[in-house]
Image (cartoon, rainbow, N blue to C red; front, side):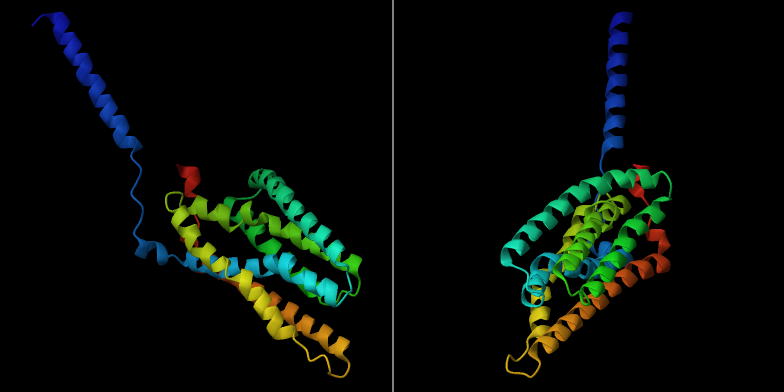
Length: 251
């Protein structure tokens, strides 16, 4: 075998070894077992937070229009335009908050930034819901709903959907399918709760006052449930802070 042939074989073997090494480095880690995923405390917190959050979010679009119409006397056409405006505001604000998130990340630590985008909007929505129960004018109610819609926009920009991916990029799809299943329960539980709490006998004395009071009870109950979602996130972090690590940044 000539020296030239030896050099060609040596070069070919070196190239093969490099390719094998590169391939082994690019192999994706296998997903964790379902048992280990379901034992994560933050997943339980997300399963509580997401339906509590959506209870206000869905009420904003599906239930509160009944309040505006039946209690405050808002015209159906106005309510239709309002719902369209709220949906557009949420869509635009979601994009805006995604840019704001990048700015906040430069000032605060990762966990501080995510807690701000998760907990502060929840508190704002609870306050808006409680305030709505005392509002007596349509313009005032619309202003409150606009603030609530603005707060709802952080859900996909800095809140649990962002955190879910950052904590575990490889298994984030599995985890979001779990807690999002619980989140969608609020879509029909909200209207059912509204019917259960606000149904009033039309023949009762002082019907308008009683009916308005029952709507206040409804807003208080929803706010209380949302408060449980707030506490779930706080407790999950305090009990197991080691789970809250931005692993997406480490990749």
